[in-house]
Structures are given as structure tokens and as C-alpha cells.
Image 1 (tube, rainbow, N blue to C red):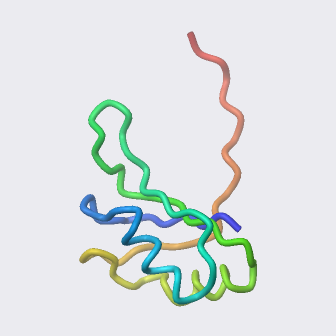
Image 2 (cartoon, helix red, strand yellow):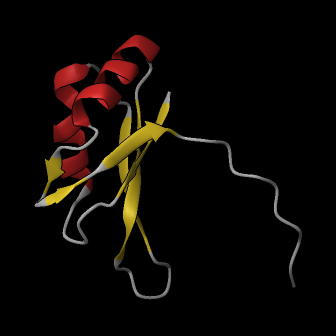
Length: 87
């Protein structure tokens, strides 16, 4: 399951995300999304966990807790809608 983590501190790292979710099960990947042009955090990230039960448990426990000083929002990530081709 892919988990969306919003309202992240701009100082949060991939390792901070991984550390917050690992107590609830195996974490395949944890990534803070950065702006392409500036390289700064965009304030959200994604965590992937292979076991849905563990992922749901992690969402329930991590949602509303602080990661690097900010309370985060967690939920199951939604598939990104197709975007039209741009030149």
C-alpha cells in the first residue's frame, strides 16, 4: 500500500519518514517529494508498505503525530489522474 503523508516539515528527510513508519511493519520505501527547480521539500511524501494490515495500522497511529515538529496527515494514496500532454 502506498501512503500519502502531508503537512510535513520542510526539514523532514526520507529517513525521518521511514523511522516514523517502521515500528508498524516493513517499509519498502519512504520519500519526501522535492521541488524540481529549487530542490526544497514540497511538504509531503509517500511511504510504501507491502502489508495492507500493517499499513492501515501505521496510518492510524502516525496520523496526527509530529514528525520533525509538525503534525502530519496520513491516508492511503490515491492514483494520480491522467494529465493531458503539454508541449
